[in-house]
Length: 110
View (cartoon, rainbow, N blue to C red):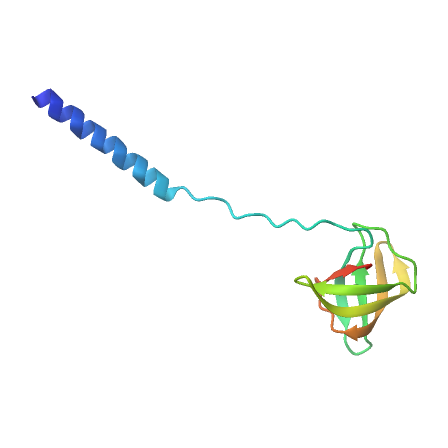
C-alpha cells in the first residue's frame, strides 16, 4: 500500500510542474510588416516655417522632380507634397502643398 501512495504523490508533483511551466510560457508579440511600394519614402525632417520636408527614399527609387506625393500616418492621408529638390543621395526636399507632415510619416506616389 505504501508503494501505491508514493506513486500517486509522484504523479501529482509532475502535474504541478507542468501547470507552472505553462503559466510562465508567453508568446512573442506579433511583428508588423509594411510592404515597401514603388515611390515610398519616409519623412526625415519637417520645416513648418518654410513649409517643406526632407524625404528619405533609400528603400525606393526617387520620383522625378515636380511629382505630387501624398503623406500617410497610420494609414490616413495627412498631407500633399510637391517634390522640389535638391536631391542628395537618397534624400530629397518637397514642398508641403496641403496638410501637416511629421517625422516618420510615410510618403507615397499614388
